[in-house]
Length: 274
Image (cartoon, rainbow, N blue to C red; front, side, top):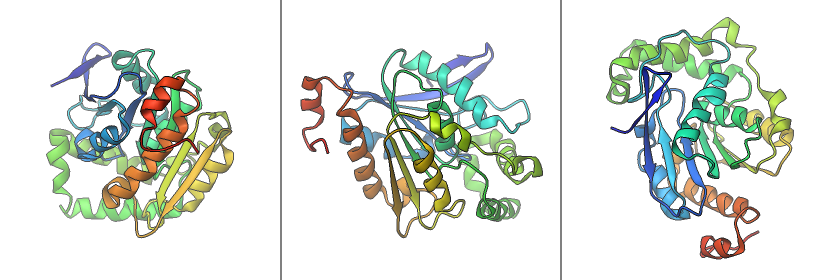
């Protein structure tokens, strides 16, 4: 098992995917109840399609990483974005270009991190990211919470083991609490200057198109929005071929301006810059 030592006693589990070392690394950030294994084959498929290397890891409390020991605060996503993620990047791919691909909570973490304008960040892809709390978000989480209490989500234990109860309650109780309803990261968006691809299913049970509109309209750089018909909260699982095509196309376009001419020729063998 490949792990990083985090704050002396904790372990962060990660996996790397081989790719061309001249291309940026695709860094995958999982959802609020996810982990590296719940991405299934999608990261490897996207890396193979683009030629890029990849990095997947379990945030603290998830999957094979160490359990959470402290209660969450309204800044729990900031903590992941500004402390845990930079540490993983520095340990695994120091001073190398990368693109973040974040699903749900992972997408929000990517945006918070992107607002810091890190020098090696070459783009962000979000799937179903939130920048504020909506009524539909609360309704969706309440339904999942009810299902969990009825024992209908036992499959989570396959991925989180003994951490399942703690991580589920941390996620659901935080988002359903009165104090979290004011959570909002829209004020950070103008600081984001790297290319953005904002993907969301039109049938997303946790967010509306208002999330996409806010991210695209308020960020400062080039931003693309893709709304997918007949798709809910997880495009990479529900419409994987479409998600692969959309993301790989964005990665090629985003890198036209940051790769050397020779590397561009190799990278763009199957698509031209638009």
